[in-house]
Length: 142
Image (cartoon, rainbow, N blue to C red; front, side):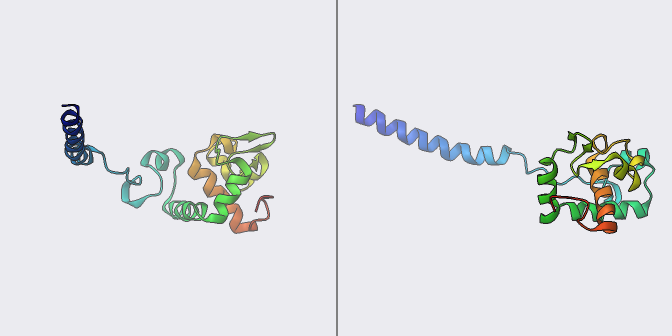
Protein backbone atom coordinates (compact mmCIF):
# COMPACT_ATOMS: atom_id res chain seq x y z
CA UNK A 1 0.00 0.00 0.00
CA UNK A 2 2.90 2.38 0.72
CA UNK A 3 4.16 1.77 -2.80
CA UNK A 4 0.80 2.82 -4.25
CA UNK A 5 0.71 6.02 -2.15
CA UNK A 6 4.28 6.92 -3.12
CA UNK A 7 3.53 6.38 -6.80
CA UNK A 8 0.32 8.36 -6.56
CA UNK A 9 2.07 11.19 -4.73
CA UNK A 10 4.83 11.27 -7.35
CA UNK A 11 2.28 11.21 -10.12
CA UNK A 12 0.37 14.05 -8.48
CA UNK A 13 3.50 16.15 -8.01
CA UNK A 14 4.44 15.60 -11.66
CA UNK A 15 0.92 16.42 -12.82
CA UNK A 16 0.80 19.52 -10.62
CA UNK A 17 4.14 20.68 -11.98
CA UNK A 18 2.93 20.23 -15.54
CA UNK A 19 -0.21 22.20 -14.84
CA UNK A 20 1.57 24.90 -12.79
CA UNK A 21 4.30 25.69 -15.30
CA UNK A 22 2.05 27.05 -18.05
CA UNK A 23 -0.03 28.95 -15.51
CA UNK A 24 3.09 30.55 -14.01
CA UNK A 25 4.54 31.28 -17.45
CA UNK A 26 1.31 32.98 -18.53
CA UNK A 27 1.08 34.97 -15.31
CA UNK A 28 4.74 36.04 -15.20
CA UNK A 29 5.26 39.61 -16.33
CA UNK A 30 7.38 40.19 -19.39
CA UNK A 31 10.91 41.46 -18.92
CA UNK A 32 10.83 45.19 -18.27
CA UNK A 33 11.21 47.10 -21.49
CA UNK A 34 13.74 49.86 -21.83
CA UNK A 35 12.35 53.21 -20.79
CA UNK A 36 10.47 54.76 -23.64
CA UNK A 37 10.61 58.51 -23.75
CA UNK A 38 8.47 60.92 -25.71
CA UNK A 39 9.56 61.23 -29.36
CA UNK A 40 12.61 59.01 -28.85
CA UNK A 41 14.23 61.41 -26.39
CA UNK A 42 17.05 59.96 -24.28
CA UNK A 43 15.65 61.53 -21.07
CA UNK A 44 12.22 62.11 -19.58
CA UNK A 45 10.04 65.08 -20.48
CA UNK A 46 10.49 66.29 -16.91
CA UNK A 47 14.27 66.40 -17.40
CA UNK A 48 13.87 68.23 -20.71
CA UNK A 49 11.69 70.87 -19.03
CA UNK A 50 13.72 71.13 -15.82
CA UNK A 51 17.10 71.54 -17.53
CA UNK A 52 15.73 73.41 -20.59
CA UNK A 53 17.37 70.88 -22.91
CA UNK A 54 17.44 71.71 -26.60
CA UNK A 55 17.19 69.15 -29.42
CA UNK A 56 20.91 69.38 -30.20
CA UNK A 57 21.67 68.65 -26.54
CA UNK A 58 19.33 65.67 -26.59
CA UNK A 59 21.28 64.32 -29.56
CA UNK A 60 24.52 64.74 -27.59
CA UNK A 61 22.99 63.02 -24.56
CA UNK A 62 21.92 60.10 -26.73
CA UNK A 63 25.49 59.76 -28.09
CA UNK A 64 26.85 60.07 -24.56
CA UNK A 65 24.57 57.28 -23.34
CA UNK A 66 25.77 54.97 -26.11
CA UNK A 67 29.40 55.91 -25.35
CA UNK A 68 28.92 55.30 -21.59
CA UNK A 69 27.78 51.73 -22.36
CA UNK A 70 30.98 50.80 -24.22
CA UNK A 71 33.30 48.36 -22.51
CA UNK A 72 36.06 50.96 -22.11
CA UNK A 73 33.70 53.51 -20.53
CA UNK A 74 32.22 50.91 -18.21
CA UNK A 75 35.68 49.76 -17.11
CA UNK A 76 36.61 53.37 -16.27
CA UNK A 77 33.40 53.89 -14.27
CA UNK A 78 33.95 50.58 -12.46
CA UNK A 79 37.51 51.57 -11.57
CA UNK A 80 36.71 55.18 -10.62
CA UNK A 81 33.57 54.65 -8.55
CA UNK A 82 32.27 51.10 -8.75
CA UNK A 83 29.28 52.43 -10.76
CA UNK A 84 28.24 54.67 -7.84
CA UNK A 85 26.88 57.88 -9.35
CA UNK A 86 26.48 59.41 -5.86
CA UNK A 87 30.06 58.68 -4.76
CA UNK A 88 32.20 61.29 -3.03
CA UNK A 89 35.89 60.47 -2.62
CA UNK A 90 37.50 63.55 -1.12
CA UNK A 91 37.40 66.21 -3.81
CA UNK A 92 36.34 63.75 -6.55
CA UNK A 93 32.63 63.22 -7.10
CA UNK A 94 30.20 61.15 -9.09
CA UNK A 95 30.64 58.01 -11.16
CA UNK A 96 33.37 59.60 -13.27
CA UNK A 97 35.09 61.20 -10.24
CA UNK A 98 35.01 64.83 -11.39
CA UNK A 99 36.71 67.67 -9.56
CA UNK A 100 34.13 70.41 -9.02
CA UNK A 101 36.15 72.78 -11.21
CA UNK A 102 36.28 70.24 -14.06
CA UNK A 103 32.59 69.51 -13.67
CA UNK A 104 31.65 73.17 -13.95
CA UNK A 105 34.25 73.86 -16.67
CA UNK A 106 32.76 71.15 -18.90
CA UNK A 107 29.23 72.51 -18.42
CA UNK A 108 27.99 70.35 -15.57
CA UNK A 109 26.98 73.33 -13.45
CA UNK A 110 23.72 73.55 -15.39
CA UNK A 111 22.71 70.17 -13.94
CA UNK A 112 24.01 70.44 -10.36
CA UNK A 113 26.74 72.22 -8.39
CA UNK A 114 28.64 68.92 -8.02
CA UNK A 115 28.67 65.77 -10.16
CA UNK A 116 27.42 63.45 -7.41
CA UNK A 117 24.23 65.51 -7.17
CA UNK A 118 23.49 65.32 -10.91
CA UNK A 119 21.42 62.59 -12.59
CA UNK A 120 23.16 59.69 -14.30
CA UNK A 121 22.46 60.98 -17.81
CA UNK A 122 24.01 64.35 -16.92
CA UNK A 123 27.20 62.80 -15.53
CA UNK A 124 27.56 60.65 -18.64
CA UNK A 125 26.87 63.67 -20.86
CA UNK A 126 29.54 65.80 -19.22
CA UNK A 127 32.03 62.91 -19.19
CA UNK A 128 31.39 62.40 -22.91
CA UNK A 129 31.95 66.11 -23.58
CA UNK A 130 35.20 65.95 -21.62
CA UNK A 131 36.22 62.83 -23.54
CA UNK A 132 35.50 64.61 -26.84
CA UNK A 133 37.84 67.40 -25.75
CA UNK A 134 40.64 65.44 -24.02
CA UNK A 135 40.28 61.72 -24.75
CA UNK A 136 40.87 59.34 -21.83
CA UNK A 137 43.53 61.59 -20.29
CA UNK A 138 41.38 62.98 -17.45
CA UNK A 139 40.80 59.51 -16.00
CA UNK A 140 43.65 57.69 -14.30
CA UNK A 141 41.77 54.40 -14.68
CA UNK A 142 41.62 54.61 -18.46
